[in-house]
Image (tube, rainbow over all chains, first blue to last red; front, side, top):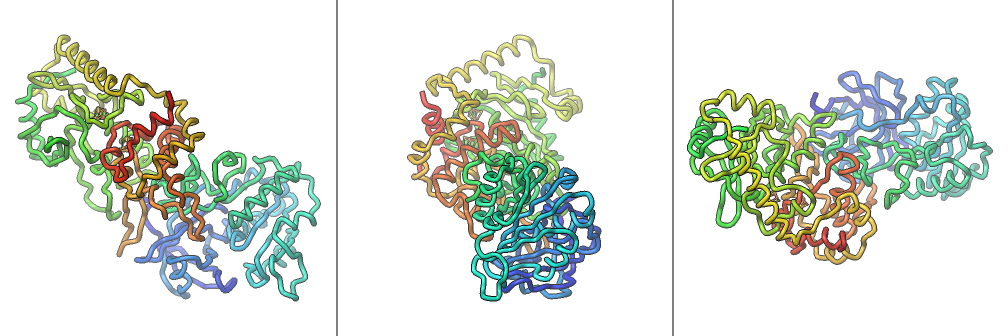
Length: 269
Length: 319
Ligand code: SF4
Ligand code: SF4
Ligand code: FES
């Protein structure tokens, strides 16, 4: 097997999430299975590839969704893709969330901005077998109401037994929910951390303050799962690009327990 | 242990070169380089080449498609090259295996009979001769070579070409040990008999700021040190017309660690410079169980900022 080989996929649909973020629905040419939290390299033939974590359920076998923010050269081209276009994916890569370890536990999910993408994969996978888990809380923060991804899905998640709290840094007048950064949502939740694990994904600064908050309310560092972002290239632990201290994020991560990485210098840089 | 005369060795390589592409190290002015060879002009004395052996195992720029993967028959690899390959193997052949790494090369290594001004393998506790990682290893005596077998392939090779070899005498083997001690002692002496405790070096590197600032400020981020290093393995995967292309890359480039969103944990040159040492003496030891520096001194040969990496290590280590 050639780990550099790309699997061809067809773009089935493109959904606008925000002005800068789109979700691409892909149909891989061959069966493609992954675990929530694992990532893929998204190839635009002749242009380049960039790493993303699928945002669809790991139990969805027919198609794959990838939510992508426009940030640079490759994502610029990806955003111009249309239904029917042919792209490539390489993967699945990395470790993913240890769903087995989450069984029987209460789960606190904290997301910021487009960082909700991998968490959506997690959430949908949890909801696929809802009764295996205890309480599921989702705290989500975005800059403005317009920047919220998966706008129509929160109510569905609530119906399926997810406690959802949202906040915006800069809301307009129509916003009825919390105002402020994501950590201020902690004021509104009542949990006893004993049987909780927590999963965090978002911009580095948000992950940093969320982690500090979680520690503050009593979470053990080994009970905090972080999805680390690095500029993955090979995705299979060879090229060195994704080094985080001694780890290769593409292989040893991208999901880490905070306890594994807390002593590494500059993890939030 | 086997013995082969110089003349027989030439003939043997001539025979091999009819079937395989033989690459050997040779002396050019004051340094050593690699060339194709058909058995003539083989001289295995000396020290390591300027360019590391690694580029015969993966090329600095290569198209990753199913292609004919020609393997090489290498004569004249040095201990430091083989130690570098040990690390590369751990990276490239670890699951999932990189199918483009040429693990089928046949390697005849050789004990160093001299050393380069920048060599410091002994400082790191290594020897100027290899103990593993070769198919056959050669030690140079006055009239011929002592040959040690290091792999099944090496064993088969000798069997196939039996008539060129005879058993080495205990005298000859003793001579080899003496020659080895001699070169090691000479290099030790040149390094003022210093020894570095690799296990303690990691922490010293972590804690040190001043030495890295002092030397790192001279770095011009040219990537010569990583390109020329037998242990550096980093590359960048890019998209070609039909397939992936791999380009050798360097952690010393400013954009190397930058993520799409713009964050860059090592935009500062001093951080990048120090990262290289942490990678070699801390991260690789923790994760691959093997250090990422062989003390070959090539990075000193190549440095455009005039940085002496050996001095950096000595200074960080302290007296
Ligand atoms: S860091 Fe320098 S001395 Fe060490 S192996 Fe690499 S090139 Fe040789
Ligand atoms: S570093 Fe040691 S093994 Fe390498 S060429 Fe110099 S003396 Fe030989
Ligand atoms: S992306 Fe290449 S080592 Fe992680």
